[in-house]
Image 1 (spheres, rainbow, N blue to C red):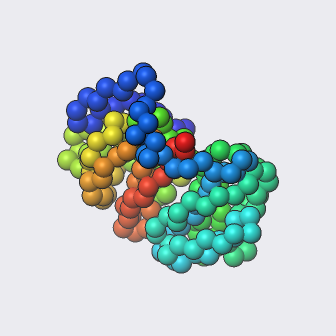
Image 2 (cartoon, helix red, strand yellow):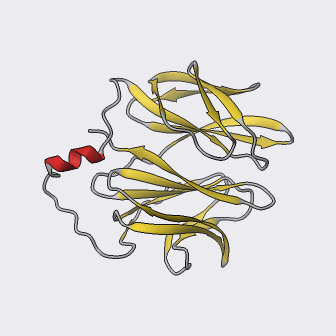
Length: 213
């Protein structure tokens, strides 16, 4: 389940109810073609392995840790495949998806998850828990402020925040599993922090979907 709440990380920034100024247009990506959606590839394996996936006839490559860029695909039934593993899912226009490749017992499997939609006027921070251990939380690096709490294995959680600069850390209880450097969050855009599986879980970060005009 995706939890969304409003939070001011540092200072309170008022969001006007009037339309955004014309100068803000540059913050948003150009619109996709009619009937299109976007998808990326994420490798979530205990041993990072290069992955080549086929998504609706388009190829995407990852080194096994860093998510790929988003590509455009058309709405309707779509087949996602890697090696001998595949999944077919209905794709809706205007939505964002991630194809996640996991591995158990040397066998790869594919899942497709819908991404939380970015928000007008605020930034969205998303925590992805691909580990096999207990639930984890996303906090400020010093552990004093919880942003996304108790994300179970195989799930994600998100929270709307003001567009400020901040670093993030993943905690399991009081134990810090890893952190990512400070980043300037932007309204209309999302930012993901990923906990990858393994004997020593790895924490990485990557930009997520962005609002279009």
